Image (tube, rainbow, N blue to C red; front, side, top):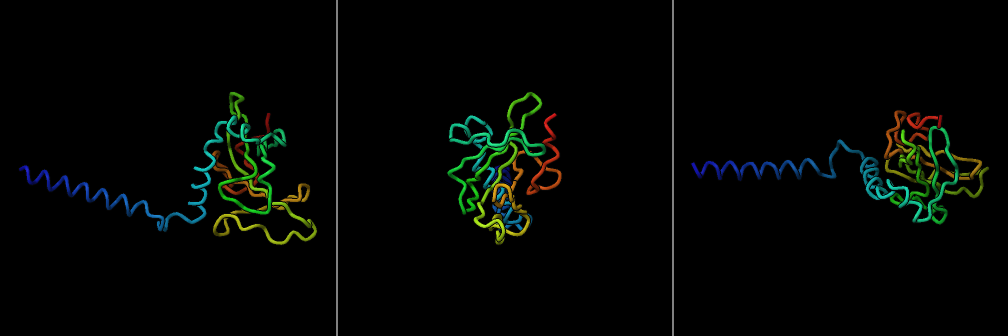
Length: 167
């Protein structure tokens, strides 16, 4: 009887390990590359769930509340011609039901030198799921990524109806 228990225990451990390593493979065809990159981003910016962490690093509210987006906290030294996955230029916060600022999204901003000839959008996430928008007023390519508050219209869509209009 002791042998059977030991056999089943070893078999269970071996089966669990096989499932663990095959189920968590980066080659998982179920996850697209951009989804893995979004997970990396979310991990890299999770500390900003506390708005004090963002402001202590120099992010400041540059927009006030923008309907369907929230407050845009920017860090000017990050605004350059480089898309850096783990270092977005802008963090978006929106007041929750209690009026506390909730981290909802990030935004990438890449300056455009000649707005009349902006060229192609920057290379962002792998694949073609991300949708860069040209902001002619700010002379920037911009990309929103709703990593903390789901956007029913899509993770890369600029406006999020779940944020509301501030009323």
